Length: 102
Image 1 (cartoon, one colour):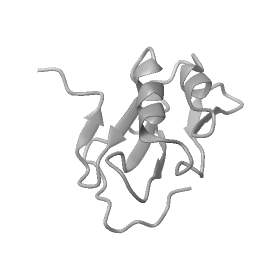
Image 2: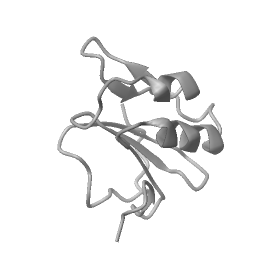
Image 3: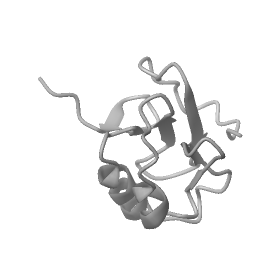
C-alpha cells in the first residue's frame, strides 16, 4: 500500500514489476523494490526488517509502515542488496540510490 502523498512525484524510471511505499518526511521519500530484479537474498530484511519482508515467492516487498525506520538504515538495506533491486527516490522523483553509472 502507498500513502497518498500528492507532493511526492512519481519517478520516471519505475521498474515494470515493483513494490513501493512513500515516507512523509526526510530525504528518502519513495522506497521501491524491483521485484523482477530481486533474487531473494534477504539482505534487505536482515538490515531493515520493519521496512522489507519476503513473500511466498521469496521476493522482497516494502511494508506499510516505513516511517518507524531511520533513513540511514533504509539506505544501508538498499546498499546491502547484491543486485541493487532497491531504489530510493527523493520527493521530486530523483533517484538517490543506486546512482546511475555514466
